[in-house]
Length: 217
Ligand code: CA
Image (cartoon, rainbow, N blue to C red):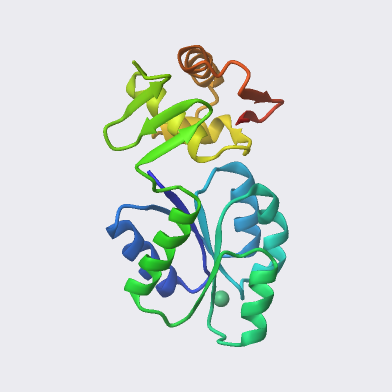
């Protein structure tokens, strides 16, 4: 499931965005100030961030400095239709820009377009010698289908959709097991080991000291 972070301090707007994106199948997490946004992006893997420019504590432009190295797509949200702001946001590495107030349908379309550009919503992902069909949940390697369990497939998909990004064990646990991480890293480590063997990614899935794992292809 695609995970979207909404960093917007106006609750009614945040609620509206969450409602309209959840409706079309995205999972949303909301934060209401810049500090909370900076913290959560280093702890969890998001597929997209909707970032309000005028945020308390740390504003959206400053936050881009943290976010850009993580390689997560960003759409800026702002009430100001000012051209200067739009240009600045795009120069800082934002993928798109939405001026408030906006139509729900426009928001959904822009989110979808950015996710598509990053291949986050593709039916088929080709990576590291594998062809992954995200609809039928089939994985092919050199013409042969690999037999993966549900958890192994979900884990593979998480890596395949976030190549080059260090993913925390907590994030892996929460996204694949869909429950709160209680500090048992063995479950994650065992599954990663098994996945490496099954798909032939012994070298590609690297352990990242004190963090978790990163896919390098
Ligand atoms: Ca604001």
